[in-house]
Image (cartoon, rainbow, N blue to C red; front, side, top):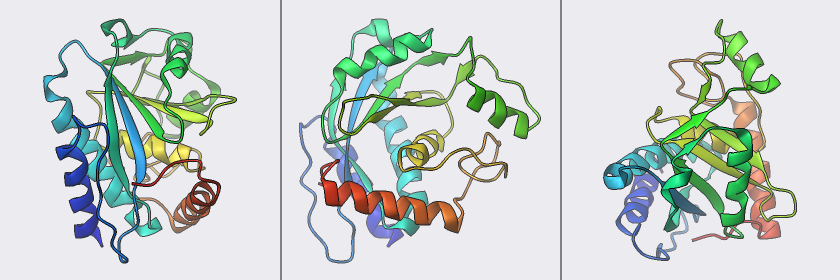
Length: 214
């Protein structure tokens, strides 16, 4: 199963420059959820390599829940979005959302001068204070379908996309420093309970056609 999902990721990366990716159907492989990547970077030359690493990690971690992801489209954003200094700038990205897709905004840096209560709590669980910068953010978009989107800082760790997808699929932060949903330094797994939540949310997304499948 994991080898098959890695193949899906490879297919997604090869087709980044295209508007859509043709993914062959396979009875043993879940059809991946469509991901639209919006890029705002001072130097986007290494975007494909960074995105491949993020997707590979996310697919590996979500495989046990029968969930896969592939890039359906990549869009370039103005350079003014490369550094997001305030939360309101993150919210302005909603005007670029593509319906029925997991929208991921890949930027250079996300500043966080006023950390949320959830951020402060997750950092406190690891004996830390918020750094004033975020690896990623999961943002609500009322009235949109789906109703949330993801913002990622390009230079952060490989599990940052998987962490934000965890929020997207319905779970919050976790105390265990090795859990993907924590702020720990060595995050490498989800719990059985988290995987069950992901499976239920994925079934709902498929049933309601909230996110298209590739």
